[in-house]
Image (spheres, rainbow, N blue to C red):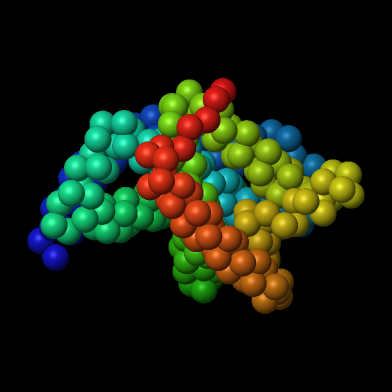
Amino acid sequence: MKTFKAQLKFDGKRLVFRDYSYQFFTTLMPLAFYLLFTKIFTYGSAAEMKIFNKSYLGSMIIYSVLISAIFGFAQIMRGDRDQGFVDFLSLSPKGKLPYYFSLGFWMIMLSLFSILVLTIAAMIINEIKLTAGQFISLLIIPVIGQIPLLLIGLAMSNISRHETLSVVSNFVTFPMAIISGLWWPLAMMPDWVQKIGKLMPTYFANNILSKVLINQKVELTDFGGIIIWIVLGLILVVVITKLVSKKGVVTSDA
């Protein structure tokens, strides 16, 4: 327990108090999108905008946890691997388990911070009103939806070069955000894009959260989709970990 507490303290200092660019991308970037599409590019009647303001809050919250997992988590772990920190921990008596749990804990804490900032901003700027159940759902659903994304980020952290990882992160994050309907409604896209988008983990999480916020019935199939992605993410991590242990490192060319 002492080892885990020490790891939490160490990771908290370097993630929360030293990397302010991380806070910008995971919090301020989704907030800027939210303000842009709810205060500037407005459309429809007042009643329609009231619904849109709530559902788009859910979209930007999921977008925030997507950035956190793919950009933040993957880059942090890649940096730790480059510095030999992960190899050092693997030789310690406690191994790497406290490190993984600590990073996961702080990723969730930082995501909760972003969720609170986005929610408070929406309540102040657009006068959104939430029930206690909706507010609790805002804190729980994105965290559950982030689990498969963190697993994808963990797998991506094995890419050997920072430059390549950055390119791959861009190719994963922004297309996934677009085709899963986080930036604008999925109905505006071609049918074939919609079919792909509805298979994304971000689509399932966003669909659940949006329906909770606008008081619609949540489909159990969306939870099933997240569970399937968690299983796929675990398989991906296990396979890549075995490849890394055999070859030393997963290499990738830009």
